[in-house]
Image 1 (cartoon, rainbow, N blue to C red):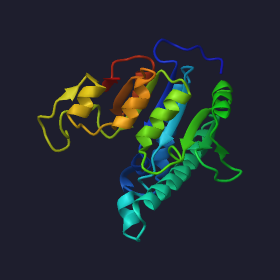
Image 2 (cartoon, rainbow, N blue to C red):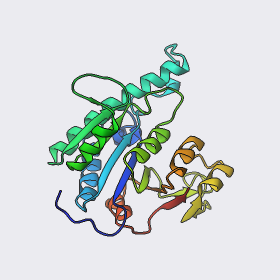
Image 3 (cartoon, helix red, strand yellow):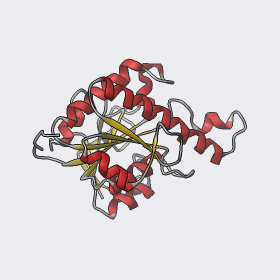
Length: 241
């Protein structure tokens, strides 16, 4: 990519929930919403950024629903990891439909149509300008997709992890239930854990802390938010690790 990099973060790991891909349907895949998210990623990448994406699988299967068919928790986690592969392929297709090169890397072997994760392959994909979508979590049960995102952020040498959510930052309580909820502009990871704010887990904090990679929490559904974060605008909440 020949686009010069503007001030801000040179590279970023973007974490998106599986539910975001479902749009207003609440489950499955919403083509129009996935295309909209892809456009937001394309717009952000035009500023010369290296972008990796970790997407969840909650729009397809969650541990609770897996349990209803008799699946034990570990199997439910494995089902969820497979769901992230489906979402990653959908997002890749949406990016490619808009002329943006993208690749999918899975933490476990899926088939010839999905590359298995390796750091060498990751760096090669980033060098040629791909948006790299990571599927399969960490490849192990008992780890959240936030933990997977933190791990991939370190492996791609990201300057920031962006957690794109349904609200515009980190609050002291759920703003959808409490009109007096207070939004933090900046907060330390220690305070997030002490307050049990449930925006990110301890394992993710530990991983990101090793490389002092900050986390920006923002509203995915506002056009331009990802780009604003990447070029260094103050947006959402910054979690300092």
